[in-house]
Length: 307
Length: 262
View (cartoon, rainbow over the protein chains, first blue to last red):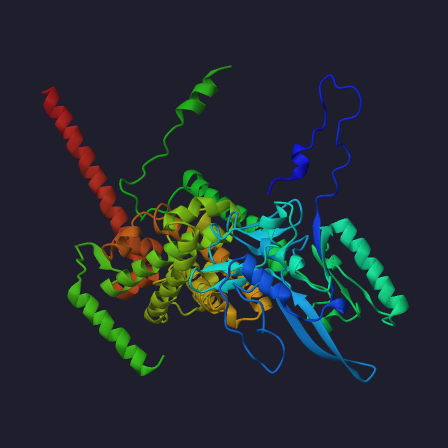
């Protein structure tokens, strides 16, 4: 996707007055905001996702709930998760649209060993490039939200793109377009955080949800998909981790210990090469021909001659 | 070791000797029979393939250099577990084959204590207690045994990651790397010691034989065990013979010079 800021004119030769359009470009970071309190679980977003991405319909799995299948799949990127919970002794039916969170610090990208298989755009969208994917599945273990899914046939991993193809053309993601209740919003990160904050405040002050808040976890520097939850203290009730973390294997180990190990191996190669040059080999004894006398060093002898 | 494994091992040994052969010339000793040599190179081949394909995935700085060797990233990823599996299987047989001579003894501890003298080449011949394998070789062998076990366990966990919890894969990734680095370090030393550092060693894995001189220089106790002769005595005898030869050659040269003058 082209960064729209790249082609925003900065200066114009011999032009009196301000540059037209300068300063009007809004922030480029995009965000999807999901208000779980107004979601009715209609699954229109699931259908829109499958349609836009031209996925074949896969068989649903019935497990005594309304949920289409247990988790997102390689060709089913958008899934409403239903959870039956309790509040003040009454049933509380929680519905949360589950998809890639497009983390600011993406665990999948940190874990990936293949050059160019996962990229993150300036606007915050994390996208998989299947052409470069080698199918190792490290991204799956790097993701705190269990989102990337492996396809056994193509040996590649797939996930929600936040409709980067649509967003690049100035359109909203397909799921947003399909939502009938308006619980899905799309815009700049700044705006979404603000209106989500207002909605959470409304829930706290007028609807009796004292713990309502915005889910935008700091442990991964925020996400480009944010939720308003009835109870921000317990995101686990919605199947969201309270503090999503990237395993240190893909951070400290990968960027510090791995190169250090390689460096040591390189030094090891140098060590044996220079051991051979300086110390020399262990030759079967007695050496053939037998060493009679140490040979004089002609260079040292020359040096001694000179005053 | 169970008897059935023992028997299988024995049969494979016999078959290898029947199909292949080791020619021992005068002044040489049999060091590695056909079975050991075949196993060694099977292990070596699968290890090098696993090492190169593994290090392609190990580091982003090596990815572009090493993946083309295996036909690109996806095939590298596809082949690596198989290379590793073959390495583990072949090494398992080498483990059975070498378990007895590789058992750690007090002499190996003594050997390790004088590792500094060994690396600086202070003494031309090894101490009399060094047997078929020295302490360093045994350290490498047991490092491979431990690494191979770690490789196998963590490798399978990462290979079948759909059956493995996320954090287990993440931990396996680190353990697999540590095993790989230990192996790489040992491999560098092994290559060096087997070739440039000790001339006359490499042929033991090709022809299967070494010279008597090599044997009493590097593994005196083994020399004593297979020849029944004292390594120090043999060494000194060879020294005297060599001196005699040198004297004879010098004498002959002087004679030639004298004749030319006449």
